[in-house]
Image 1 (spheres, rainbow, N blue to C red):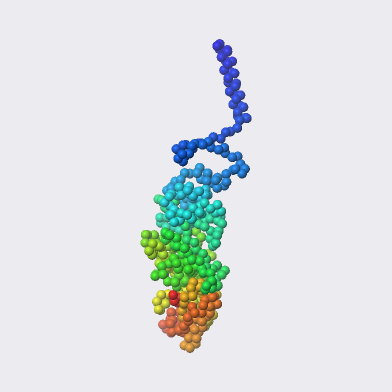
Image 2 (tube, rainbow, N blue to C red):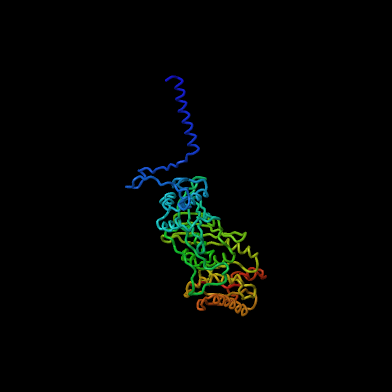
Length: 460
């Protein structure tokens, strides 16, 4: 082949290649190549199959949950124990895993040991429920904080009953700034005995009882503390009572806290209502944070083990009482709803204005809580002791104290309590709580305000 012939030959080939490239670039279609799963990853006995063509849209397009599942799988492989830079980052990862609606993938992501066996069926039901989705406005809420862990809740909608479904997620503190996903658990369901608008009324004995709380197997101390706090704020005496140790926490003390919370219109703080100050195998201390408008306060819970279960075995709410006193502006009516009973234990106490035996609106709200307690069973009986300060004659004060006890009895009966459940006795000025007079013989108005009272002893 001569040099001239070679130039012509290769020129023709080059022209053909350029023409082909131009044609395919302008007229050809992109062909998707789907990765074929290796045989080693297929179930035993299943032959490798050619993957189906990807649909281009219409009725055969992927559903939103399928898209979410694919997105989660593409973004990260399951990584139990992964450390996140913040609790928010960890919760966002959990939210994405839940969005896939695949429980097995969710378990693979958080780790097999993160979900206790008894909780697994309900967790699975929540994760896979097609009608449940994370709330758009507040998908997650911080519940508690301790030195070693924080607890957040995933909030689902639509709401059912008094509250929407939730899942707890414990995030373990790693180093100074890291967090890893730990236990996934369920809150205890707490219903309300009455709404705020219904304060002043009570279910009648024999009627619908306040919803109880179903103890969850293996519920930890923080779960019990949160459930107890919700029961107190929701005025559900039966639920709160079931979560407290009756040998160390009296009915009167639980009721007094409920009265104080109701009187102050306190609600749980929305974010981080619990602060764990001590956590050991046998004891846990928790501060429950509450707020009312711009005011805030707290009450303290001590929890210990009773058998295999955690129970509230200590209850302190002096800060709530101080907040009530401040709200009252230091008026003429005392604001401590619980006192030590001379016969042992604690008594609830309602206070009266000078020379009055009429219940105040505050007194009626307090009685509504007592009526809730008595509605739990006709065998429950209370004793009401009426008292007066030292101004006036002995006979006058005896009659006045009797009228005060009778006013409470009549108020409870009007709320549906059986007359046989309420006993009364009048003591006049003979059992003062505080001195009626100063050491120099002058009047002591503050002391007398503590003596114009009726004490309610829960005799059951």
